[in-house]
Length: 500
Image 1 (cartoon, rainbow, N blue to C red):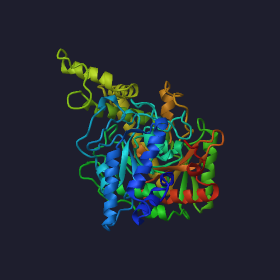
Image 2: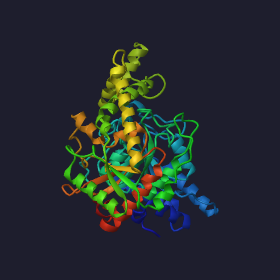
Image 3: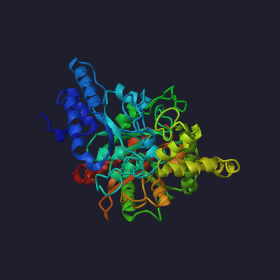
Image 4: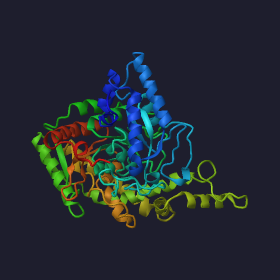
């Protein structure tokens, strides 16, 4: 019988293979991960809710299917940590906010339903910046999550709970959402793999909205192949989502199994370097570029001048859309209700509820967005930001005429200490400098580990960017880099991450 600690160290693909062959049961695998959560999550705080009974019930269903000789899917019985932004029938969904504390959704998000249909075992819901607004998971109403590499540092955000669950071996798979980098940035600072699929490739139905033209759910894992298997399970057209793309899912698993960059044209973005970039991050990125050359890729320097304006455009568009989306939290229909003592008007109750239920960062963004959308300022702010968005998309289009993919550091620095940027919003926002352009343009992007920064021994992420609906290119390049990296230097997470 396999020891429980061994079961938590397997990749998702290895776990599924063991379950399918009968070497381990889905219940054994699930119990091993639940035991791991119990052992370490008090320190990490990756989870907001652990659905022990639901997870074991799903695991028993998988074992029953196998005993009946039914064919199991590629991820049947594999445990997963789900970001607490997707609705889950009968299980709390808080979005990291007090305003939805205790809310039990009556339905599943399309992504949640697809995970269940794939017989994935959902362990529970992970911590996040409130309403996905943040780059550090410090904005959660339920307290911050620690980075398993150093619990005094941030695990990235807004999906820090999902990335920390992976890096601390509490789950082999996780789901995140990426509005300005909230899958890729946590992946980079925890030494894991995170993918922002093409906008519209994964359904947003049942995903609590932050910024509707930017939000995108996607896979998080410890290997490129695991991310591809999860991507394939959750992607595809959904008639319940008006922004869903009605097109076949790109062959991401095939690309991950056959990574090869010979003859591929790789563009290095000139604007993603210089002042503000940590020396160790640039050292590891430059090594990755040389590795791509050695693997047979043609490396070209590319200039995307509008990328310098991306941060400013994002922080007008995202708050504007959030001020519109969060207007639904009015204390009248669901969630928190404060001050309803029978003497106050509906407007007063709404105001008191929002004051009590929303945290400082959410309030800041609502006020920014409401101002940007107000009469007399709309064209100057929101309208101008949308024009910059068009310029950024044109820069991407021009770049992809010359190259097949673009590469850059995922983040300018490694994980910073918890609290270091809490009083400096601009410093916090700069963590998303390299990731935001892909959200504004709607194309696909991945972060994967490319080593540890020599000055602090913390993980560094390599970002790969592909055109819309060419998500398979991410996996092709990612798999090639991952294999070469492991052959040369070993896996930084699997071999060097500190034990909890």
